[in-house]
Amino acid sequence: MTVESTAARTSRRSAGSKAGSTGAKAAGAKGRSGTRKGAEPDLVQLLTPEGERVQNAEYDAYVDAVTPEELRGLYRDMVLTRRFDAEATALQRQGELGLWASLLGQEAAQIGSGRALRDDDYVFPTYREHGVAWCRGVDPTNLLGMFRGVNNGGWDPNGNNFHLYTIVIGSQTLHATGYAMGVAKDGSDAAVIAYFGDGASSQGDVAESFTFSAVYNAPVVFFCQNNQWAISEPTEKQTRVPLYQRAQGYGFPGVRVDGNDVLACLAVTRWALERARAGEGPTLVEAFTYRMGAHTTSDDPTRYRHDDERAAWEAKDPLLRLRRHLESAHHTDEGFFAELEAESETLGRRVREAVRAMPDPDQFAIFEHVYADGHALVDEERAQFAAYQASFADAEGV
Image 1: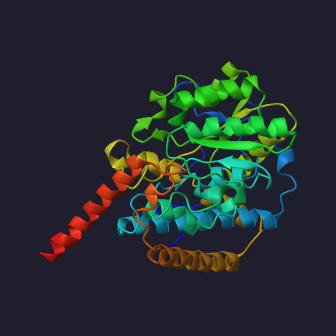
Image 2: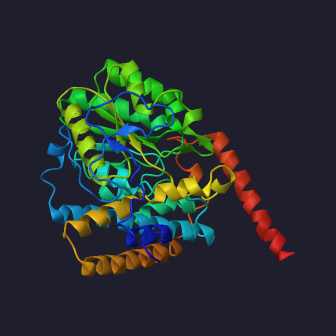
């Protein structure tokens, strides 16, 4: 299985063309004014869709020390994350997973922000932050247990400072705010980051977390991945102003960054985390990106969006963009890409084998830890469930 889409490969072969050159303009000012109707959004961009490095006086300092080796590392992160994601999608289609939420197209936003974190920072994800989990050292196979129905998470959140996936939309922003308030009371200089999508920005929990974080000056970064679609609802049905501008009403800064530019995402997140550690309070980062796949494997995006929209965003593919930059700057060669392709296939096989080897969970474990000392109603429900399970065996024996 290849690590780039067919459209992306075709676009890379014609890199000399201006495909995607109408992409977002670089903007130096943090939290600039809104977008004119029909105009491209103003945002922070350090790599154009063609892979050209553009200067930004405010954010260059946060990535000037990035070495060619680190750039190759960012590309490797995105390739392997995309390969894992593709394998998980295939496993769901084969009946091995109950559901899967793909990150296809959002790799730069997640890898860029994930690599900006320190080990002692704490992450509160949604259910799509597979790239951030990769950056935090969570084994990809651990992400799949919940989607296979064999556990409720699969990893120790404190082992990697990466909380369990949150299915309830928006609630993790409140968890992050409370945790950040605790970090501040402890006197630590660690920071907290909360991930959510454009659809979650309409949730009351997000508004409440903005209020609390601002009032208590909590060291938290709100990282919104605006992938243009809240399931089938477009962003313009979610908000009358660009999402990052909402921060102004709560008294803290917001900035929109090109979410398909891994270097810009790295720089802006570092800036926001630095503010948090310095006691300057919360920041809202809106990563302007695109969900190239379905919302989840139960969704059919062809029912509500057009193929030409996806094609336009494929020209701004985050992997293609960084690859072009690496090639044009002579930071790598074909041997690097060939080795990475082989590594990605090895990862795919490992994930596939690990999922199929996962043991079924104990069917009665759900009753074990409801109450510390047990409860008569739980005992009754356990007995009813046991009888229900036994009825299948009786039917098979008839």
